[in-house]
Image 1 (cartoon, one colour):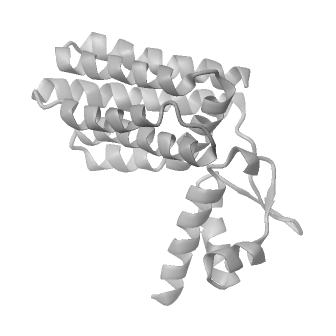
Image 2 (cartoon, helix red, strand yellow; image 1 turned 45 degrees about the vertical axis):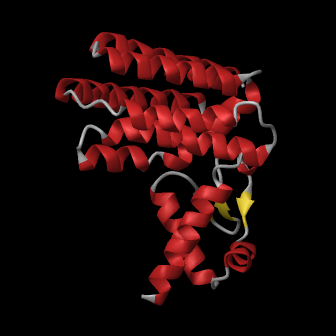
Length: 213
């Protein structure tokens, strides 16, 4: 039990603190340094890295250790395509049930808007965390556990690309908030095609920014 707890702690730390930093792209991770930072032994760190390798987030290179590969244009495009499929389905399900999570999404958006003018890496990380929360609320409203689990499993990748997009485009925070407002308005209208279009436009803008970065 102790080992599993240490492994989970290491897994979450590397996934949420290391892999979400654009600066980590293309670097190698030092197991001993990570163990010291996290406060565990090297064994749970190695187990965590193997879990991340299975998810395609790191590569284990013989004699070198864990490498954080940069995301290719194809991987970014596939991520956005998958997000589009999942989010459009969730929007349709929420509208069909008459229970679109408008209030909860507006609350997350309001929190984002308070950070839209903030600068610095910590503010950007908080903004992207709220971005993930906004979209996860929509996904969870479909009341499909597998769908929610699949989407939450994209967390590290989404944080990586989200932070990259924020720093690659001028005034991206405010534009994200405007795009999120369009999604909420579309959901509130009850028009599925309108909602799909708002989601697609938001993801397409982000994709184009990332492909240019």
